[in-house]
Image (cartoon, rainbow, N blue to C red; front, top):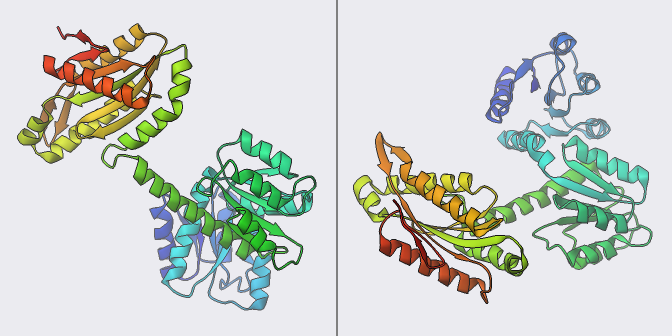
Length: 417
């Protein structure tokens, strides 16, 4: 990251922000220093550029940095209509006025966005090549992954082929399918929790924005729009999507182990249940329970107990990579295990059970050893997910009745040697 700033106190603040995000920071305090620096060193991911330098008082350094292919955020202590129009005409990431501490909070958000926005895929649907290219260029400035489509029909196909797309920006006036018709078609498949839609139009009708939003769009812009407003709308809606995803994560994930929780596991299992019954592969619903977990808490403390659960969840995730896993509660975990045949799944579980019994966990210079009991049922002709859960729970109880480090699958006891 390149920081161009003549005020050393402000430069220090920006350096701190950059380093907090993991950037290696290089600082220049004048246009002369920038010229010398870029002769030999041009590999910068991003730059913050002071508009007024002692030897470049009217932003002369900005196009120089941009010409070297460095995405730039302009910091300015002055603002008027002339400067504003000049900045809007330049292909910069953004500009920030150095008015108060809030400006640096905003800078942190912008720089963080440059690092992570590539994870967000955006689709632009517009039949005008020039407008579509312009919108795509704005998004690429902010490092978004961008797809494009010349009409609504092709936009639906792109969405079908690229499930990672989280944001659609669509024009209203398109052949075959209007933007509003596209929104209506999309909302039959995607809720507003899964895909953000922003519409725009150049037709001056007072009801156009309401039509878009009532059809399922999240926001609306009137063409021609200001890039500042465009980005403000984009980021406001993306932040809203992030909040929704965080809420979903909190609702679906166990806080301690980061595995799915019981409710979410059952929901996913239920979605797959019909396909599992028809599958040629062998599927088992398996429950694991850490033996004598109460004694672990009593002997080593509850923090040690939590550590055992988190370490066990890592062992589960490593051994059963790609399988549906969950913490059901307490010291009980679940797995939806698939394999070519029952013998393969059985051997996989036995190997895991024995591996756990030989594994030692270090906590506060103490070694904690533990074992597990396993209960599972083959999924074949059950009437429901609940019936599978009941059968697996019965198998786990049978295993526990046999003692520690035992396994029961469909009523058959696999005794440890």
